[in-house]
Image (cartoon, rainbow, N blue to C red; front, side, top):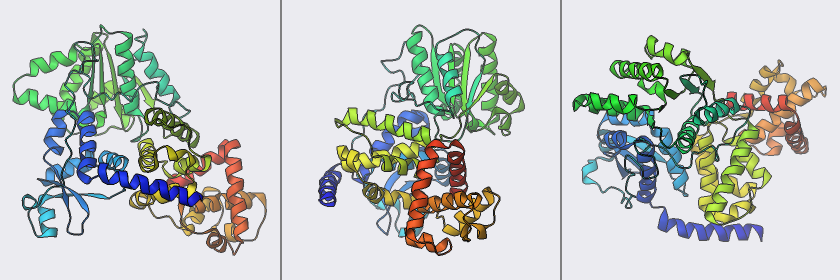
Length: 483
C-alpha cells in the first residue's frame, strides 16, 4: 500500500506537471528570476537574445546568437541557470547551451527556421527602484527571500554573519571595507542581501546601493557611451552604504577597476560604508589591480566556508518550514531523506535547496512522508546529470591515503580499531557515493558479507553525530572523491 500511495501521488502530480511545466513555462520562470538577480542591463545584453529550441534528438537547448554570448553565459550564468531550471522543472529534463551556428550544424536547419518552445507570459520585470525601498535606494537586484531571518548560521559562517549584522545596525567603530569571500553557493549573496534589507529598515533615511558586479560593469559602460559619467559617479558616491556582489568578475577590466578604486576611496574618505563579496580572499584576487586589491585587503576580510553537514541539515529544516508555510502543508523530511540530501548535495547550498524544490514540486505536501527510495527515484535524473562517477576502488584509495594506510589494509581481515574504523568509513562512503548493492560492496572489501557492510553503515551514522572529527573526515573524503 505504501508504494501504491506514492504511485498515486506521483500520477496526480505528473498530471499537474503537464499543465504547468512545459519547457517554455520553465524557461519563463527561470528568466524572470535571472532578470531580477542580474538586472535589466546584463540580462538584456546576454540572455534576452537567447531562445529555447528543441534539438534533433528531442532534447532542449538554449541557443545564443554568438559565441561571445555563449561564453559569457557559460562563465557567469550557466550554473545558476541550471539551478533555476532544475528547481522549476519537476520532470528533470536536461538543458544544453549552443550557438546558432552549432545548432545549425547539428540539426541542418537555421534556428530562425525552427519554432522556439512557447514561452509563458513572464511577470513584468521589477522597476529600478522598488516601491518598498526608501527613496534614493537602488535595490532592484535585491531578493526578498534573502534576509537575516532566513539565513541559517553555523560554525562555517557565524563570524561573517555577526559582522554583517553589525554593519547593518550602522554601529560605529566598523571596519571599512568589509569583504566576504568563499566558494560559490554558500551564502555570500544571501548575506549581502540580508545586510541591505536590515540596513534600510534600521535607517530608512540613509541611502543604500546594492549592485552585482555585472550591474556595476554594464552601468559603467553605458555611462561612458552615453556621456553620463557625472550622474554615475554621483549615484554611487552619495551612498551611505555601497554593496557590490562578486567583485572578482571585474578582474582584467582596467577602466572599470579604476572607477571602482576611486569610488571606494571617495566613500571611505567620507566615512561611508562599503561591503563587497568575492570568491577568494582579497589578497588572492591577482587579476585585480594592485591598488584596488590593497584597498580591499585593508579592511575586514571574512571567510564564508562551505557548510558542514549539521549546517546543511539546519538549512533543509528551515527551508522546508518556509515552503510548508507557503504551500499549506505540515511536517518535515524524514531523517534518512534529509541525511541523503545533505550528503549528496554538499557542493553548494543552492544545489541542496534546488533538490528540495524538485521533491516538493513533484509530491507537494507528501514530501513529509517520502521514503528514501522514493526521494532517490525522483532525484535520479538530476543526480545523473551533475555527479562525478565514483568507484569503490577510488573510495578505498582515497580513504587509505587519508588515514595513512594502504588500500590492501582496508580489504584485509584485520580487526584492529586502527583498521576497522577507516574500513567502516570507506564502506559508508561506498553506500553513499555509488550505486553498488550491499553484497557487491562487501565483495569488494575482501569478500565480506552484506550484513557486515550494513553494520558499518549504521555504525558510522551513529558515530558521526557524536564524533566531530569523524564528521570532518567524512566531509573531507566526500569532497576529494567528488572532485
